[in-house]
Length: 221
Image 1 (cartoon, rainbow, N blue to C red):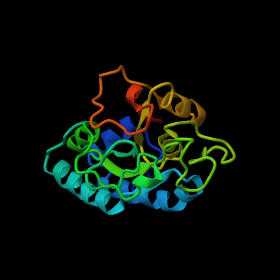
Image 2 (image 1 turned 45 degrees about the vertical axis):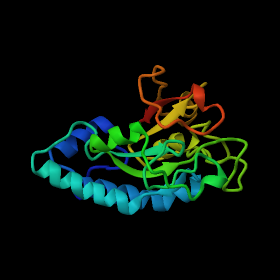
Image 3 (image 1 turned 120 degrees about the vertical axis):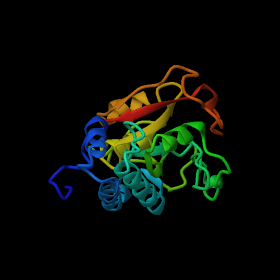
Image 4 (image 1 turned 90 degrees about the vertical axis):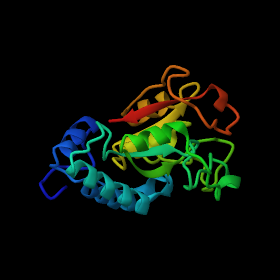
């Protein structure tokens, strides 16, 4: 709960966007509550590959200054989100689900990440990919369904599905070639859709073998 009694982590993007715009909630307060929940719950779900805590707090402070100065960027300004780890983030570890990529820090961000940053959204972490063939956490399922950890959240956007359903972010972005956003959304009781091919930039392309058919899509409550 926030200082004003608002349930920060379980709000919808639409509701939180208005609260941030009207300064009833601070982006810093939202990010701090989110990171606290991630620390408490994420290890049980194995959905995060990288938590970007310091980065998120800096972004939150910037958003708070901008909104306070009347420089509101739009409905994603101050909103917390996660990215499937196949989407590159400049200077932030991006493994693409491959254990050989654990130390990879891309020199450029995906266009999608760049657009979200320009909109003022706040990245709180990179989340897991159920790649089946790889398992850099040495578990048969790379993330767990928050409603029943004996079950899979669905793949391949397993991390976005699990993290969003568990309120570890207000929104997430997965990629979908044949159900990889829609399947986890259905399994985890959230909303997700595959955007029309070409509607959202795929640059730079994912290295996963079937990624040529993939298209990014949002996931949220």
